[in-house]
Structure formats: structure tokens, C-alpha cells
Length: 465
Image 1 (cartoon, rainbow, N blue to C red):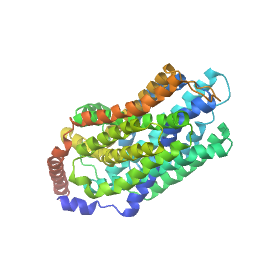
Image 2: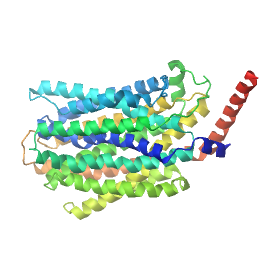
Image 3: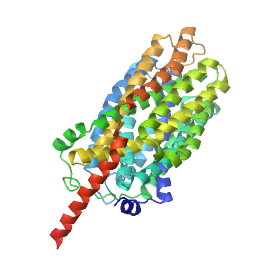
């Protein structure tokens, strides 16, 4: 039965690669938002760090709620292109436009700027990005049910993922500086990245296919919300994954944001941000396909724990010499290896959670589970951004446009967040995974599911005779 499943749902390299193009598309905007946007608001537009933190924190409450709404929409979507991937087509152009609007903050009063940032941030993140990224991520559960094919697809996806991050973090600030360093340069570059993102998402749409036939307790029909929501909360592993994605968001937001500030103020060169981050992303690119060769030999839980350990060590190693670029690179390489271990399995863990949910409740709700988990990521981004903003403000950071010097207190605050803050996040990953046991349970769960579905198919065949 397992061999038949593997043969029927094997994906071509072209399809896996095209799915990876969708990941690059998502990462272009995600990298701009997590690594560059806060710096743009504070150092180029002149909005206070605390104001930015409050706006992002409030927005991420809406953003997390929109995840759940969007994925219930996906679960109830029916089109000739399938349930999930049709949204990749629908949102490609709005994706590019909304990203550009993030940078067109008017030179007006503080309240006018805050309102504009709130509206455009939510348009991009709460609406457009949500209706692009979440259906894209959910599409994998409809492309194949083979755990092996999902793992291989995710390996290719996560190997390609850093390309978007590298392209943004390595080139964006240098290009801004060479284009005059003003807001106009930010607008033009974001528009260019947005256009490329739209094209990559369309490549993903046109070269992938949904294959999974849903045979759950409602026969693939639209699941009423009164049944879908209780089913979601009966799935204990989605709760664990929700908090895992909160922690991952804390790591990505803290590392991306504080690396920019650390390089600019503590090392005195903001262009080093892209160079140091390149070490992290190269480590991910090299390590991820290597992990693909052994990924099934070790449980997903163990990979995440290894990743958390490497992230912790990679952060604390900066203490050896906080001003050394070589030490910074060493820490970045270790964090990159740790990130690769986590990123290589985290989306496979979600699809495993989908199977567990159907086994536990009789209902297959991949969209709802995907949204519940990734809303944790949005919640984590908002909470972390707000915390960084308040801590930086309390630490004496000056965010007025044109500031060239920061106090020693502000520099110490940046250092502590960059080193000790990230180390604590790595430790939190390890602790959370002590409660995750689905890897051991999965083989028996999938066997029972396949037996149930074979029985349903046989009953349908008998009725047609």
C-alpha cells in the first residue's frame, strides 16, 4: 500500500523546483519586512522605534487572525485549478503592488505617517501576503500525500529559500546607498523585487498540480465551521507547532532586525549586514540538500533540537570578540546550520500534523491547521517587533532621520538583544520539542488512515456496481 502511494504521487524535479520558486517569491517580501523595514521606518522616515513597534504589534493581531480566515477560505475553495494553488494566480499582481506601497510613506506629520504605515502594513501582510503565502504552503498537502515526496520537495524548497533572503539582504542596502540613500531608492528597489516576486509565484502556479483526493468524513465536501474549529482544537500537535512557529518568528525577527542595527551602529558599517547574513544563508544552502540525504534517519523533533543548540552556540560565540568580522561569520555559519536543521523539517511537521488531525477527528483541514500554525509566526513577529521597539526606546535609541551617533546605553541594548536574546530563543526551541512525539506515532497513524480510505473506495466501488 505504501509503495503504491509513493508511485502514484511522485513529483518531478520540475514541479519541485517550481514550488521552490514560490518560496523565493515569498522570501523576497518576508526578508524586506523582517530585516529591513523597521530600519527604513526609523532611520530613513524618522518614525520612533516605539511607534513602529506598537503599529507592528497591533497589526500582527489582525495578521494572525487573517491567517485563520484565509485558510478556512482555502479549505472551502473549489476551482478548476484546485483548492490552494489558484490563490497563487489571483494574488501575484496585488503582491507586487502592496509591497511597493510599504515604502511610499508620505513626508507628513507623525500621526499621518503612523496611519499610513498601519494601513499599508496591514494591506501587505494581513491581506495580500496572507492570501499568497498560506495557500502556497497548503498546496503541498494537495500535491502529494507521500511523506518521502513531501520531504524531498521541502528540501528543494528550503535549499532555494535563502536565495530570496540573500538577494535582498546582500544587495538592498548597497543599492540604496548607490542610488542616493533616500526614500525614492527604497521605493524603486522594492517595486523591482515585487515584480520579480510576482513572476516567480506565477512560475510556481503554472508548473505544479494538486493530486490528493480527499476522502474524509465529509467526502471532500466543504467542512462547516462548526465542525472544523472543534476538530482543530482536538489536534494537540498543532498547538505545539503554533508555539514552535512563534519561537521561529522570534528568531527570524530578532536576528534580521538586530543584525542590521548591530552592523550599522556597533560595527560602524550597515553594508556588513548583507555580508554577515550571506554566511548564514550560504550555510543553509549547503547544509539543506546534505540534510536531505539523511533527513529521514533522524526524527523531526531531534532536528529542531539540534537546530536550537546550534543557534544558541552561534549567538554566544560573538562574545569571543564582538568587533571581529571573522567571529561574526563563525557565529553566522553556526546559526545558518541551526536554521537549516529547523527549516528542513518544519513544514513537513505541519503536513504530518494534518494527517494526525484527520486520523484523530475524521476531518481533513490542512488549511485550518496551516493557518493556526503560521498565525503563530505572525503573532511572534508582532510581539517580537513590539518588544524590540520598546526595549530599544527604553535603551536610549534615537530614531530621528539623520542621526549619526548613538549612546553607549543604546549600543549595549543592541548588543544584548543580538547576542543573549537570540541565544534564549534557541534554548526555547529545545525545551518545546520535549513535548513533541508525533514522529514515533506517524507510521501507525498513516497505516490506519490508508486502511480507512481503501475501505471508503471499496464501498464506493460496490455502490457503482
